[in-house]
Length: 238
Image 1: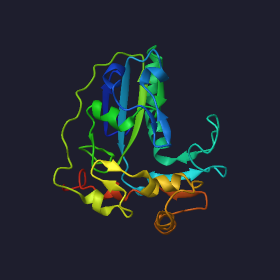
Image 2: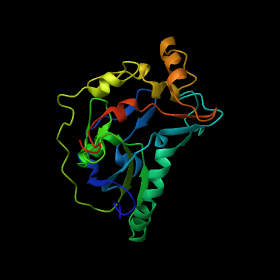
Image 3: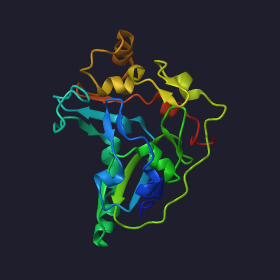
């Protein structure tokens, strides 16, 4: 069903196998939780990837009230619309519906550590750009997770490192935000775009954001994906 719905890959793990991953607040963007903190009856985690072949998947449309993460109360829902999330959710709806039809509990989530959980499901490994790098499409993938009470056989974690001998993403970053396997969020254009209300970004980062980040409309922008598209893994002929 997953492949037929347009996903590149699908993998499974159990809540126990991801209990030791990093949880809590990631920068000040969001809080990631253990699967059973979200669904106590979860027995399996399904991770899905789809190929984002065009930067249009990176478009984000902000609410007029959006000032950035943690600039509002915990119940405020003014963030906006992220194209890749909406696409992956629509693709995954038949899978969610089928699980429910079979009598299982199931729900979408992106509140777990998505990239490291996907690696535990055998779908890829975090690269020097900190993104999930997959054999099929490199880091140019959208992610969706489904928690379910269904008991599914877990896959083996992914172990291959695609980044040995390559620093293309690190060199391509226009602000020098990357060192191998680490990102400085205060130099990242994507993070700066997501937080228009923050005043503690260096002036040169804000200047590069204004100059380099494409804005189709006053309330939308194409999230910086230079490091994603610089990666040779998964490109035709590589």
